[in-house]
Image 1 (cartoon, rainbow, N blue to C red):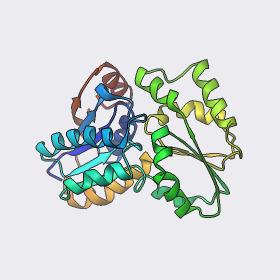
Image 2 (cartoon, rainbow, N blue to C red):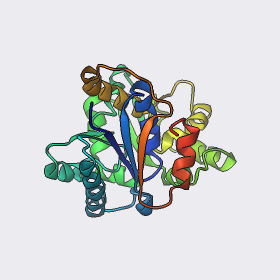
Image 3 (cartoon, rainbow, N blue to C red):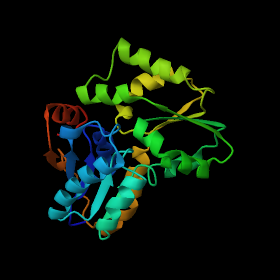
Image 4 (cartoon, one colour):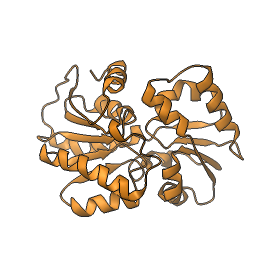
Length: 253
């Protein structure tokens, strides 16, 4: 693929998605966009989100990008629909439609969703899950503190573990399937794995996103050359230190 792949997020959450994509397509050229000036997105209105993301999409279009990963669950549903209308020539990959494709291998009786308040309020995520699991009990809980901690690089410690324990206990029914419906949440995977029951499957939609992109990109590639470090350009609107720190920790720099 001659043009770069764009990845958009409000901050560092999208790095967890980029990491999964780079793992299966290490030879690609990427442009990672972190709108740290306006993080977090989870508490913003649809109108605000549309304007913020349009600005970033236009930047990527100017860089000759034709495939953009919206690595933020909050930017979905009505928000993405508005943006797609203005950029019909761009292929958008997003966390709900494409990130949930991998759940088909599960047959849960109960599903727990951790997300931002905006994702829960907008409702598209739950609607899509009901299409996959019409007879399952589905409950979504907001976990805004995890976004703030991830943006600070605070991804371990007693306070974090206590918070996640409380979240897990707040589910009415212990979920068979726990979906991390925010790209910031996989930073805490080690703690989630410790806290939740051994009978609860933890689902990270980023792996499904990566596999879907492979199905679009891989047939077009004839040369499979691994680039180390990966070929990534960075577009950061505000503070950049934590973006580079976490990117380095994940082998992206």
